[in-house]
Image 1 (tube, rainbow, N blue to C red):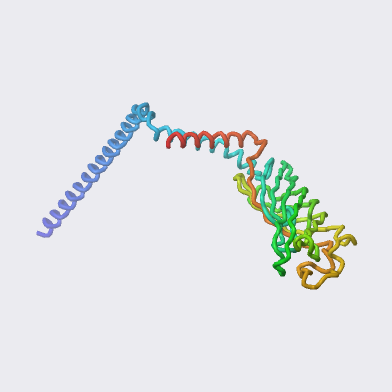
Image 2: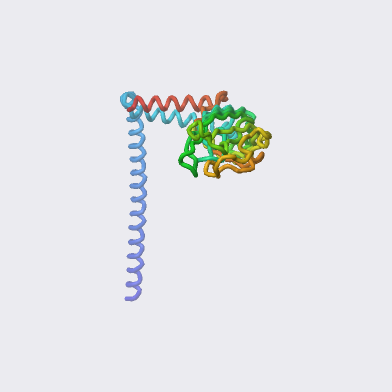
Length: 302
């Protein structure tokens, strides 16, 4: 009896194993067939897309897709050249500037203490730049006496800058310039000229450390810190060095009674518009052409 039962269990187990094996084979066949059908469907869809391409090409979306694809291909074509070259943000750049303080073009002692002006700068491919600026000191009222007016004036400056770290967005630089470096006003107000304190503009030399932000974009920002040297500051013909003979109320306390010092610290801030590189290489020309084509395509799409 046990032998028959044992034999029956063996036969039953073999039958179950055989059935599972057939199910696995059939499932593999089904998967293979499904994969084949999926591949066939994908191929069919690709063929349909290729057949329908002429009709889709008439649409703006398809044109935009082709334009974007061409742009990406061109970008990849220049990737190796750009990796070797890297951007030189400073080379052959013309910059129009406006600002206030010592570089636009003068800083002084009275009132707001800064002139307002405009300038132009050209940075060569050797990162040596020439610049010039012209500006004005606005007229105003004495800080201590409302009845005393401050005369306005004009200043000018030109100089050379040298920049470092051309491949970074922030550039450290050094500057040497000559022109109007300091202004002040006469100690004594002119009673015969509407209580006006005359402006005194001093010319001399200025040396600055520059911190500049400039990339391939148009915006330009610069901070300058330095000192001036005015060799004529202590000349005897500077009237405010003499003590006033009028009443004390007419003498401004803003002005140093010993006169304008020959040396002094100055600073300034400048904003600007940087034009693109004037003498680009082939890589840069292709980049600009691609940007122009893409811009035109987007305008047409709109």
